Image (cartoon, rainbow, N blue to C red; front, side, top):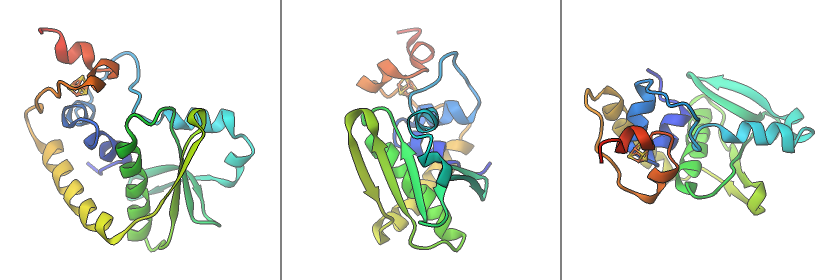
Length: 167
Ligand code: SF4
């Protein structure tokens, strides 16, 4: 199974959520962590969306890539899972680099908070990425579901009822 940007994002949110998602356990309402920005992008930035292309490299889909400026644009609603958002963009930059596109940058935007961050891939990120991908592969291949997180973010996770039904 190719490691997707959603896998990298969820790895930084909750290993159990990553495993449940990878094993196609789906709940009725969608999780906050998955591709929420696409809709915001298309509705809030119709003109800007024109210069961005959807591209797929090594099975990884990048929704908004500007090939001229070599910029990945990612929009999120809330910055509560900022580390996961940054990791997702860094994975896009890593995949671009692995495919010969060097020096790309990312723009992470939270329109409702009026926050914009520029994201680059550093040498530390590259070595961290190798660790993340190794750990993600272990989780994806595991036959057992990782333990409960017992964290405040559980309350806004789509798996909340599933995880805490017996508690
Ligand atoms: S409810 Fe909590 S433990 Fe369960 S998948 Fe979501 S974040 Fe992880």
